[in-house]
Every structure is written in structure tokens, then in C-alpha cells.
Image 1 (tube, helix red, strand yellow):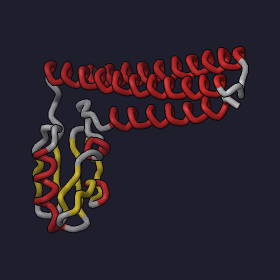
Image 2: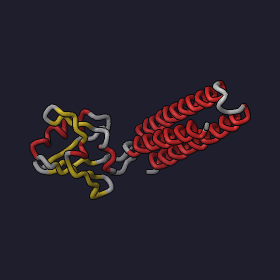
Image 3: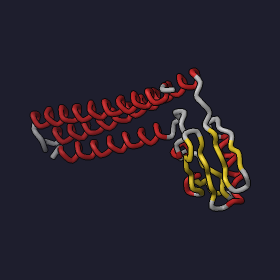
Image 4: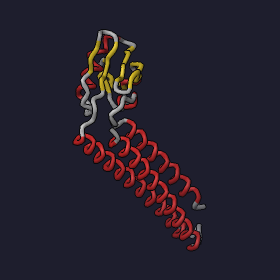
Length: 185
């Protein structure tokens, strides 16, 4: 009976970890990665559109991204969106393709990025704990309504805690890997 609450919580925790993973991929770690631009939205004729839905983005070299737009008239719009973003990149275009040179990260910027990684890891952990709290409240409600026994409640709460601990460990592992990637020169 309590398995439904636990399964739902597990599913939500997996989604939270996926969101965190995507967030880490969009952080610049000194090498060109097309996912860097995933968060950037372009005002494309009055509609906010992600760059990756307007163009092919590739990384032909370790420190270079190329953006070839399907609608060449949108080059200036995309350039403005990139300049407004928090990536700190300056786009250059030849009329057909936008080139983004990814500069080498300095020590100060690396530390800033690590703080960002830690902050978003903490946000993800808060979300996980919130999911756990909701699941435990559902379990307590089942006990209160006499659907499950007190032993079942304890067992379910213990299981929920183990699942949460494992998810938190995954978030920490992802954060550690990203920090190592950022600090490697």
C-alpha cells in the first residue's frame, strides 16, 4: 500500500537528479560543449525560442562552438541573446555561421563556477528532502487511516530515508565530478 508513495517519490527524485545533471552540463568548464547554449532563449520574432531549436550547434574544436542557423536573418537576434547571457562569450559571425571562442578559465572564474555547482547541488538536495517529506506524510496518513500498521510505517520511512540518502550521494558525486572538470586546466 505504501509502495505507491515510495515509487512516486523515487520517480520524482530521478527527475530531480536529471534536472541537476542538465544544469551541470550547461555550465562552462573551459571546453566547448553544445549544451552550454541550452538555457539561452532568443526573441525570435516575438517568441522566446531556445537556440538549439533554431540552429545546428557543433564543437569542431575543443575551444570553439559553431552555430549554423536555419534562418540566416536571425543571426543578430542570436548574437544579442548570447551577449545578454551569463556565459560571458562574444559571438563572431561571417554572415552565415556564428563562432563562439571559449576562453581559458582563470582561477577566479573556476572558483565562481565551483560555488555555482555547490549552490545548485544544495538546491537539488533541498528538492530531494522535500520529496522525502511529502512521501513520509503520505505514509503517516495511511497509518492514521489504519491502512497500514505501525511496523509498515517504520519500514516505509526507513526505505524512504535510504532512497533519499542514495539520491543525495548521487548529487554529491555529480557535483564532485563537475568540480574536478572545472579545476582541471
